[in-house]
Image (tube, rainbow, N blue to C red):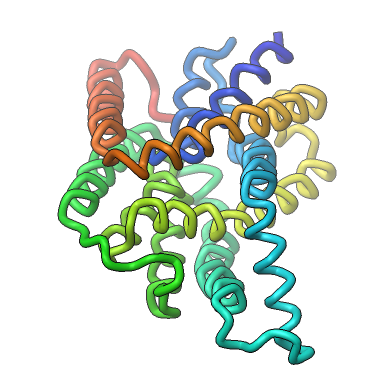
Amino acid sequence: MDWLIAIVLGALQGATEFLPISSSAHLRIAGLFLPGAEDPGATFTAITQIGTELAVVIFFWKDITRIIGKWFQQFSGRTDRSDPDVKMGWLVIIGTIPIVIAGVLFQDLIRDQWRSLWITATVLIVFGIILGIADMLGRRVHTLETTTYRHGLLIGLAQVLSLIPGVSRSGATVTMGRTLGYERPAAAKYAFFLAVPAVFGAGIYETIQAVSEPTSIGLGWGPTIVATLVAFVVGIGVIKWLMDWISRRSFLPFVVYRIVLGTALLIALGAGWIEAL
């Protein structure tokens, strides 16, 4: 049974990680329907996210390797420091710092209180509405080439909110990007780049912790690895679909989905059909 659950959760992780609907919230909700109604947990979520970030690396391989290569070349003088790829490398570093600090400071909250379904339901609705407003009113004057260090830091600060299940990493960063006037594809692409070091860092950290404390991983190593591989395969397809979608359409369907899902959770919690923790 654990293997089947792992496949389902891995597919769910891959399908929701890049959409602004919160993969951690969906894994948390999925736990309600697992045998024993168990939360998959923050450790399982962080490890399976390694699979989805591998999908980002593969999909944007040329961009990522070019950025990394030129970032290092600046120190030998082979690439000018004003090069857009060098600048993007610094932007990712600057934007990653806030979530690293927050992840260390708020570990206990991330693993416990912030996983309450009351919080998840509320932020699904609230941040869904904020995304809708930002997407509707946001200008389309900035591209990746015009990204400033100030904007990079602000989007990085927005990424910190993704530590709360229900906010969504892509949702928070894209919302900030649209608020600052970035085109949808540019906001999404920077969100993808920004997530890579943060998610890999969290995943590797949780993997090391799980080695020393095996019970924290829930389903066990075998099923978790399978879930991570499934998340990788599904994630590649979702990235391609999303980039095609936002080049022609808005985020409105995701906004509506978040509000409906959050409202349904609040009703279920209020009626006592499900427990918050």
